[in-house]
Length: 147
Image (cartoon, rainbow, N blue to C red):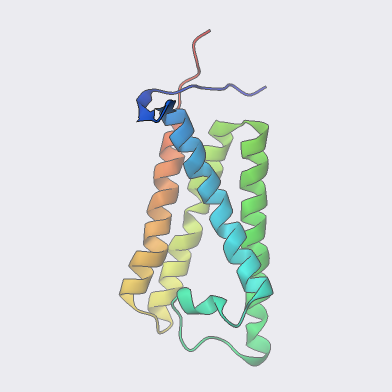
């Protein structure tokens, strides 16, 4: 059984009340949609996907099997996040998102230790990690709605 929360009112957009709950839900969807997009990109368009990752030169020949590994990993991360979000288990989702923050940190370390720039590591991967940590913190600190 999951507990839903309505959150604190933080403003309005048009006639809709913007609550912390809604903002956190949008952030959680982004946390799931981004790896889904990246995973599909690495599987379906591997020739253009690596440019934004930050490592050059990119693997070729048999080493490009890494694209499949990265694609499947990212799609799996997205599937778990979407499933738990759909089931309404927001606290569990918070822990999953927090654990998943290790992935962009590892990606940033790979970038800086394999020919990429610190700028790319920070702007692409560490910013993603911080977004995940913020989303996790919001999910983990939600309070149940009062009956």
